[in-house]
Image (tube, rainbow, N blue to C red; front, side, top):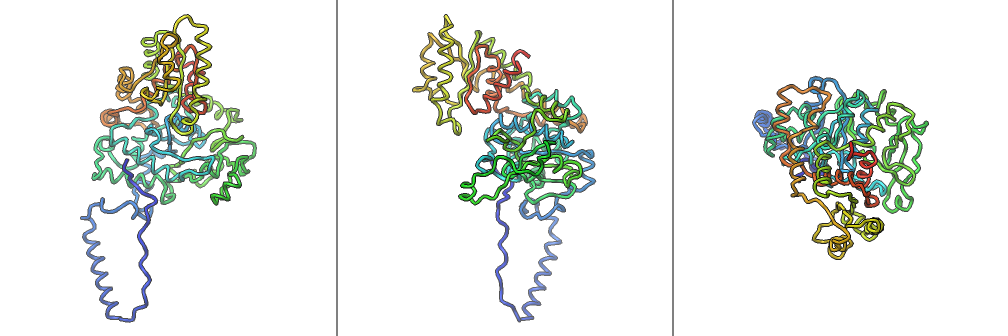
Length: 506
């Protein structure tokens, strides 16, 4: 993936110090020469291609016409928006999306619905170890990857995969597709935005400038952008949580780690509405940009967002209940049901085995142990082979010498089923998702008929990634003999949530 911007790129070196000159004729000649060169540059500036000037040479908001008040008002109809930067795998991205829905509702902002990023195309780092990318760096990386997805015809909105219709039917949640939002704000026609992004094109250059602005690398822009630079190292966001605003959080950096890595971070609990809502510096700004919105329980606290289900605010409590489970769109669920009924054709157990990624590769025996115990119990009650649907990141060619290899050879007691990317059910679902374009149907800013046609024609993806994973989760939701998941895996958590809400029978 080509980086469009490089915020860490060093600026030009300062001129070296020179001794004081006393030769006045030389100074005069130099001044005349400089005046001539300046005049020449001024006259010919309009003829120089913009692509010759790098983003790093821009110095202020004056370079960004998108941030002039009349442009913003015309393009965005006076609405205020919330951007954020998802990262890591799909399950993490879905978790962040739910948090973004909650934060945008609390702050009364329209949520910009992002694309589904390729698995680990953007990595945050480790919050518990206080080793993460800054919010502006994450925003730049996500913008870069989003543009590459458009260029490669792989752009799929989170709204194309997850059914958000129940959310947007409520007045408390407003959304807009990232493609339409960026097209309006960056002044790039949808036809060009989704179809003609050559690296030398003017549209590509406009998107580079616009993305650099929205990343907040150069800081905030009055009336246009407020970049939230508080991340999980320093902040736990709360909302009306018993007067805890400003207090130290219970989880802090370990003293040994602080000393060894020279860290000075102190984590405080802050009320997100007091900090970024009415009466704050951020309130009137058109675009509020977060970095990561990922959170998870850790050592008695939350990594970043702690707004509990038992919130004392009825509207917030209701919304948390709504976003707890967001089902896949019907094309994915239908595919999972078809595979369960038409291919497996029997009651089955689902085994989600994460064996290669990160910490999981060092705990293969423990991962297999729970499955082995469950299958031994089921085989004692069954007169025929126990059907098992396996979803795993371990290629079938590497099953030899593992418990999976043992199961595959024991066909009298167990019958294994699994999906491949080239299977008909996966390929068919890819095509259905690409043509459905669910994410294009929702938006708080009405699109003209011309824009709708362009969106449908030019912004539909040529390829949809991750579909095998989506269908596998849908199949697992239909496993009547139970589910065995990998401890600590967000994919396992997602399947458990689907089963809790009876997604297969919905």
